[in-house]
Image (cartoon, rainbow, N blue to C red; front, side):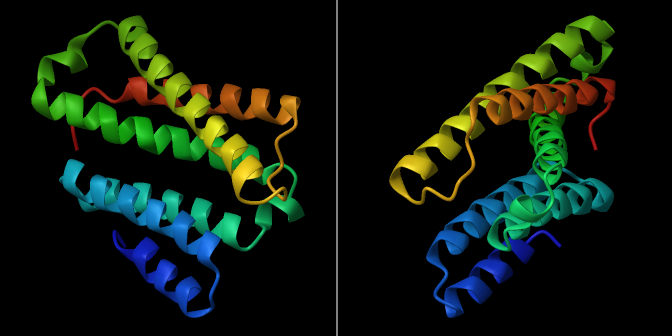
Length: 162
C-alpha cells in the first residue's frame, strides 16, 4: 500500500499526464515518509490510502464532480500528515503523549494550520503557474484551511506512537 502513489505516477506517466505524475509523486513521497515513521501496518495503510485517494481524486477531477469532496480530503489529509509528524515526535519523546490535552491540541492545531496554509499556497501557485483549472476562490481557501485545522486537532487524541 505504501508505494501505490508511485505506481499511479507510472500509470499517468505512460498516459503522458505530467501534472498528474507530479501530484502522484508527492503522494508517493508522503507514503514513503509514512512507511518510515509508523511501525504498524494499520497506520501505514490508513495514511497511504488517504494520500492515494487525494492524489487520484485530483487526477480524475473528482473535486469538480462532487462539491464537498475537497473538504473531506482537506480534513483527512491534514489529519494524516499531522499524525505522521506527531507520531515521529512521540517516537522520539514518548513523554509528549502525557502533555495536557489542550497542549496537544494546540501543538497539533498549529501544525495543521501551517500545513493547510502551505497547501493553499501550493494551490495558488498551481493556478498561477500550471493551470487555471485549479479552483481557488477565497471562501474555498478559508473552508479548506478550517477543516484542515479540525482534522489536525483530532491528532491530539493520539497519546502513543504507532
